[in-house]
Length: 228
Image 1 (cartoon, rainbow, N blue to C red):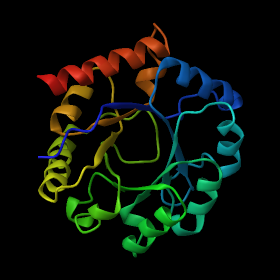
Image 2: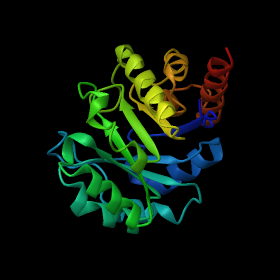
Image 3: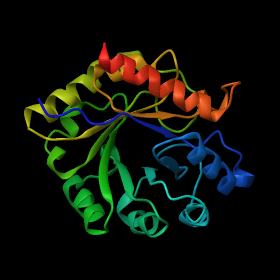
Image 4: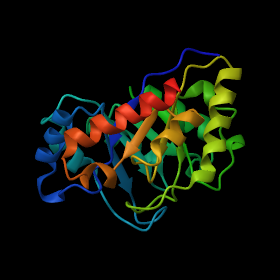
């Protein structure tokens, strides 16, 4: 079994105030998050429209922590370069949108970013088992993508465990990320299943004690679940 990857708490900025995204990024960095995720939606692969590269580039100068772009788009090959230029160090592409997944992931690496691949809840792990050597992270969606504030699909935990076991069997040191419905009541299950990168949106912003408390609380719960 490979050495466990560190726990990372990564916010989605979907619940943030879009009129002051630069300030919101600063607040998240000060709260102690490990990086920031931008949920890029094209209105085609998923219903909503969110962040173009110019918006992300305008926020890049405000913080030094890494950015990751979750490309929920039908044509990641066309857009990847623009999000790298905008300052995203990690690009996540969906297996469902890349018919030539090896080529797409290799292109992300060529652009100088860290490639990652995402799986919708109904997409089997088999869709990525032959590209694990090309990625630094696998994202297992624990909601159907396109909207924030959805309920965690607990039946995805065996899928998280399957990804982790497959990476271990291949001797690969990969991050396994989960995104969707992560909060105080669900984070332990995700970590116990094998996830180490936890995306949180609504749970961070609705904590009455503020972002700093929310981040610390989720990190403590994740570390406790790993240690148990």
